[in-house]
Amino acid sequence: MPFYFYQTPHWLRRCYPRRTWRIDTHESILYLTFDDGPHPTATPFVLDTLARFNVKASFFCIGANVVRYPDLYRRICEEGHQVGNHTHHHVNGWKTSTERYLADIDKASQHIKSALFRPPYGRITSNQAAALLQNGPVQQKIIMWDLLSGDFDTRLSGEDCLSICTKRLRPGSIIVMHDSEKAWPRLSVALPLLMEYALQQGYSFAAIE
Image (cartoon, rainbow, N blue to C red; front, top):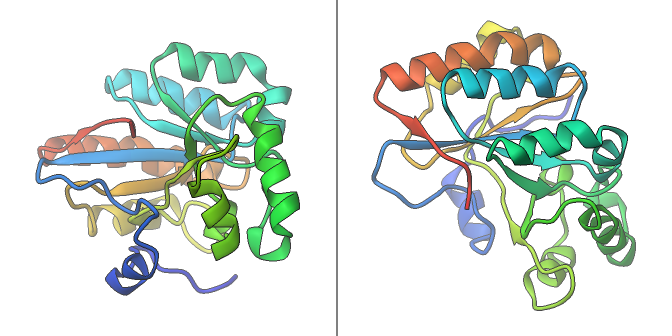
């Protein structure tokens, strides 16, 4: 598995200042985000857990999964969570032409009505990003992250993912988790424990506006 940072370093954020890495706040607010859903097992669990703690979050959905599980997507929206575009086919921008990349995002936007976009794997070229940020039919706000939970990493346990997060929480952190098949064994352990810990530490949660 490729190397990755659990917490996005300052120098990387400075290289791409037009992308949103954290929310600028001094308040103790965290922003939970979930990528790759909807998923028939993981997404209901996430929604039930969020409801139990009375928390709102943001879901960056794959268009094809929205088409496959429309009732789950509808539930995300009806329960007051934010949604974002995560392409239609989970496209890697580094391996895709700008034209094809934008077309895939546009296809997802037919089912996901949102100005928020997160590139799968975080991989997007400068040309692709510039096209998304400019005025146009697929104009988007590019949401990256401050903290990766690592729940996609099969080398880790749920307890590992929890520890990764609790050691690095800070006001304004955008935290990435995944409501997906691959992440499920770790997500199912880490999510409720993380929420309980953060609330005990005086944090609150909000969806990205």
